[in-house]
Image 1: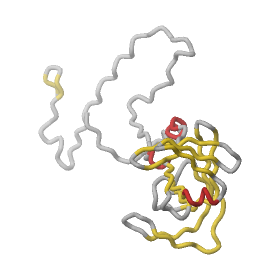
Image 2: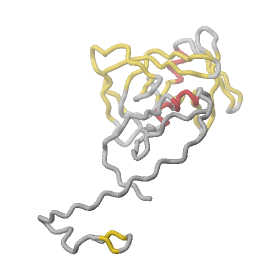
Image 3: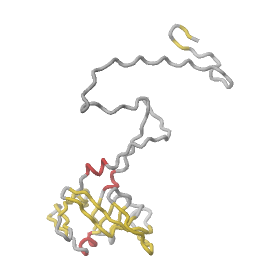
Length: 200
């Protein structure tokens, strides 16, 4: 029933077996017409009255750490890692994490976009337990790579003589990458039907 302009539900509207149907809300008036923008300024159509979840995975997946304490090159799920083959005999390894045991079944390659070009590192084992990638300094040097540093300023050179910069943060060297491309490639706009509670 209506009292003035306000809608009041009958007292039994929420009871089991009630046949009360709320009156639909009146449609909003259409927005006033606006002058169309030139095509190069026009925004893409908006999906009004819809909620879209944008999935932004952890950017740490793209971190590549140079580690003198690692005996092998390892990578978890990374936008730069590609599996190239399966090992005939899986290898058991120990990690310096809370769950230290892991079995390695795959080997692959890292192709890393850097400001000075693409850095390619072969013989990288896949371990889903780690986040990012760990590159063994000893493995690189034994494969013909060269590490030059003066204080904390450092660079890596591959066997062909191509040089790649390193960043020094938190007492560790990481590969200097084109971070912009790493982050943009990780964002998806896949429609999500998961239930969410939204507070306004």
